[in-house]
Structure formats: structure tokens, C-alpha cells
Image 1 (cartoon, rainbow, N blue to C red):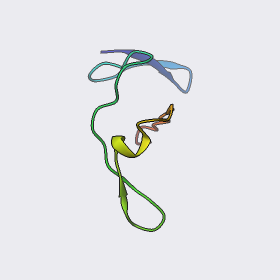
Image 2 (image 1 turned 30 degrees about the vertical axis):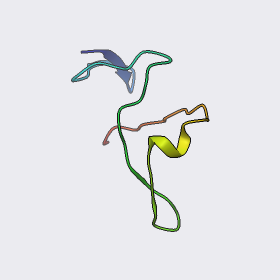
Image 3 (image 1 turned 120 degrees about the vertical axis):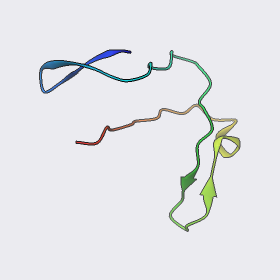
Length: 55
């Protein structure tokens, strides 16, 4: 578990945060043309995934 700050209060998350430079797990995104994109589509690029928890 990792501890993050939410609205100034410490919160424990479930699971663990990935390390910097670690390989992303498989994911599937829907592009604006409704086709799918996955890790292979971004293989030659550096990615920054900005994930927001449910609020």
C-alpha cells in the first residue's frame, strides 16, 4: 500500500504504485475514432499516464 494526500489528508491506497521507468501493464484505450489502442501503439514513445481516482 502507498500513502498519498487527498485534500490535505493522508490516505492509504490499495495495491502499490509503479516505480519510475517501470513497464506499464497491459491496457486498452478507446481513441476518438472509436478504434482501440494498446501498449504496442506507444512502444517507441515515452508515456506519462495521468490517472485520477474516483471522486
